Image (cartoon, rainbow, N blue to C red; front, side):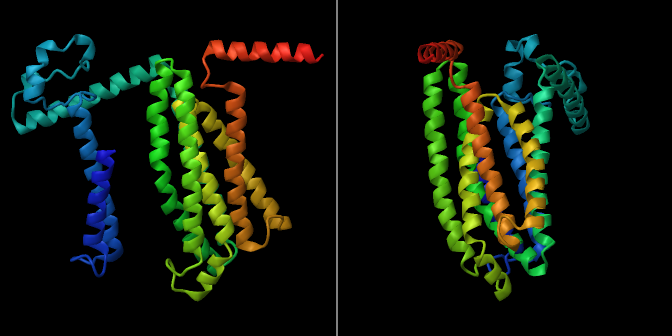
Length: 343
């Protein structure tokens, strides 16, 4: 989190310096913003790479004093095959060759780990889920843009508000990914359930706050000076707030599902929801069953978020990944006894 915070602040400083017309000394506008974002990504990559190497999670191809001191203590199992380039010397060219060799060896080792651990299927479903979510929002945007210039512009502003505020749910999502596997891996299922309940409750409370902020922002001209766009944006106050509030809760629930290792389920669900949203948008265009125009498109988005919550709740109730195998067996036994008693 410290690395994310520091790199985020650095990127923000570069954005202000390069792009802001009043606060920045350069004032390069859109080109400056693009350059600052690109530089921020490179800086973020360098900071995280340095942290991984420092903590021993990655092997530096350039060695160093610490690496040389610990070289005799490292076992063969912890070294990357093919990355031993000590005989290449100390020049800059040799270090570049060392880096290339170590990178190739690391890629080979990663491929071998993925193959042996059978992670490829899970990773594939993660990609499918990501593309499906992007496709869902792209379909919603295409439907809004087809309504005309002003509705399209109002939708763009509403979507910017949605994305900007939804990033504030990232800490809860990350906490679910980090804390829940630790508890489940140690067999502390009851503790994991408490953590999950607390984190989802925080996500829901945060969603209520963000929904209120979104409602306030969409009723002002903070993001647009065009009176037509501002008027159209005011009609989206309730569906945008509902979408944001529900999506914050979704992020908390999906973070807990990923923490429980159910990533394949998420990918399949997102793929299915993509086609459901396409059907809802087509139904809205034909029958206007979600209300008129752009407001109806955003009600489709809110329905999509609510659908995700319902599906995840049913999945967690059916699979119970936060219960131990013994607890799941005991629960099934109690249910069976209850049914026999009722009969």
